[in-house]
Figure (cartoon, rainbow, N blue to C red):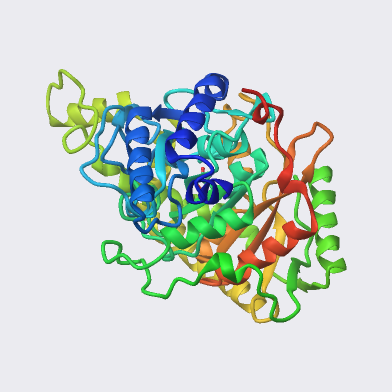
Length: 482
Ligand code: GLN
């Protein structure tokens, strides 16, 4: 991140950096709608604090003066945490998410909260109750989702980095649609404390940045043990940035021996195949791997995710949190109308699907079966990782689709997650990096999936790919406008 050195070296002050960032947001975000809220005044006060520390010669954190955007399902004590929902339109958190605290301790300046599909359910950010985010490369197309606001903000150069959350692809898919890098850390690598839960066994917080170096920098800051999330592991956090340059032995890249499946656009397929050839010509060994149960991934995901969502979202009942219908006639009416009025159609659909899957008589047939399939999928990947360091694949079957194209067809929308959801089911780490553009000039992403807690190796392989190519340096036209 150039900003880090610029502020540290005195080339510019943190106030100047933040002022320029706010001006860009002001100029460009009216069209993009990446932000749900921007808090300029607080950001400038924070910037002054960094400048003061610099002047006094105090030790500075690794992100001193760097403006960062945060997805609006991460709790912050400042502003609202809406989750893109009418339910939490005016909800103010009493505490910061762990990842937010870590960013601030590292000197980062959080400039605003970004748009998302309601409660992070969706693949296009069109399920936001407030507005859809548009793709910086083409304003008639979606930015992807659910962290569409974070990906669009980074791609349009409004901020150098952002946080998203990834339950089934929500950092990687929008990163791919917007031509930036998105990471889903291994389950347990980053604390979920203060991340509003969608599906607790799948959710992870992850960075979205312009290149792999910046992803490594952000991951180092947010990763590590936090006793407030019992699933967050107590494992040492390596210096991911330093680790990028290490090339101990030749890389072994797995490629699924069955083809990438139906529905894959030929232009995406050929870009991914070209990327694999590039890896091979740079010395990687390409190894076919068999993942026989991956074809059940989507069905399995949409049972586990909806079941957990129906349970997690039960807390939004008009009593404990968020919107309460003004004139309830009795308690059942209070629940029904508060939820009915304040939750959008996709959220309601998922709650109903999940409630169904967990009901007596269906639990064994659906939910339990899905858990068994989940284990089979994890075993497939673990077996493959005996032979390879990472598995390469597309991130999404197509490039960014048009706004409104899939809003009436939930199944078509769900299919855009077909390559990303497995890493959430298995808990492995996965990253999406730009690997070209299609004939409309829209970015295409390449996904690497690595074994659990092997982010160091995963990122160094992604970095090697980026060092051999220049796709990540392409910027959308609005990035140079001001
Ligand atoms: N698009 C997927 C879904 O709708 C994943 C969302 C996410 O990762 N938060 O569930």
